[in-house]
Picture 1: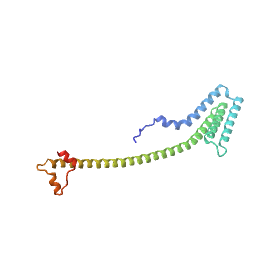
Picture 2: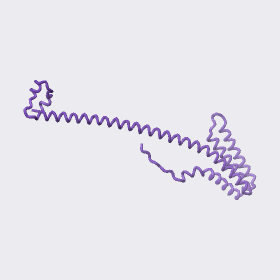
Picture 3: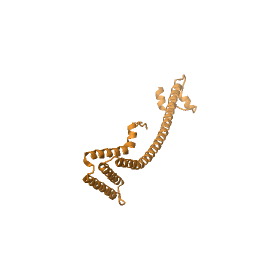
Picture 4: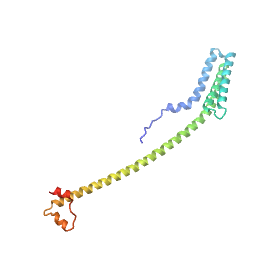
Length: 202
């Protein structure tokens, strides 16, 4: 029942919280690099990114439609659609004000979506820890009961062995007394030695 306690590194704790901001910042940086390399005012690039964004959005709509819709695939498709649209606008714009505004909006939306997942994950983790604690306490109680039962059995066996040893010592002491006569004891109605004890005597 002894479980190893592992302390999580501070980076492992902070990384999930920083992931949405890192993702949107990475998209913004790549879009601005793309802008500096010829994407600015390029109609072909704008049409391409718009088409890809619409396709990803349509894939998300199809994935979420119906009773058999997959929420993970739909969420991934919608996130891809938003990232492509953000990349297209940030790469096509000539200034930084609109890309920065979109970056702020995308980061806020990403944190809003991530917060729901973090709450669900926290509830599941708390429920798992509570269930693990209950099972650990139940097993500890069973182990204590079994230990008490085994101790009682050992004590009973030890008492029986001590009684047998004392009885054997008493019989040997009685047989060694001077003038001990088993026949006289039997005639008086007192307990008689067993044949094995008589053989041991002679």
